[in-house]
Image (cartoon, rainbow, N blue to C red):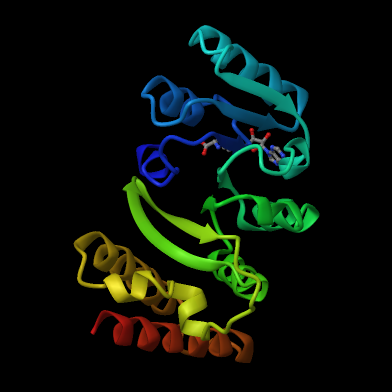
Length: 223
Ligand SMILES: C[S@@+](CC[C@H](N)C(=O)[O-])C[C@H]1O[C@@H](n2cnc3c(N)ncnc32)[C@H](O)[C@@H]1O
């Protein structure tokens, strides 16, 4: 949570989409990082949980909780930073696609997808959203935060390697946490390959080939 909080624009209102226990906005508002915030939740259960969390923190005067589907619950120009964290990458992409014109009204989008990073980076490039920062967080597992500038509208190209491993992260490969993240992925691929028997069928051998290519790609990134 702290890693995402650091990426929110200071002194400006923010919205937390899929807020659940409202940890992030409660932290940002009570620390004075943001003057006020909006939480958006979809289902009845999580919405009630968010309402309760904000109320228990005595922040109802500074945090508004709305029930709705993603960005649809926001009005244009209401907030500067929008955070979508702790959801699957495809859910995040669906939310962004559903309200694509609204994204132009934000100054920053902070995404912490649980998967489908390559697809999200591709989606950003298609929309011309510059990837301003990428950070790695190790909290048991590894999490990647993407900071996007949704003001651009000129599509640009990312190579497949950049989509998979991050155009910004790849340039920060000397940072220990970034190296650890890539090394962890490398180990994962090596373990998968070790589990494919030499006598396995054509499909398994094709899979093995793909993993071997990924390993080569990561070794090049790490060099
Ligand atoms: C795992 S929680 C993540 C909570 C918090 N953002 C975090 O990072 O720890 C994901 C939340 O997203 C909410 N969610 C999923 N799709 C949504 C949508 N389209 N609009 C609003 N909330 C959504 C779910 O109800 C769930 O509470």
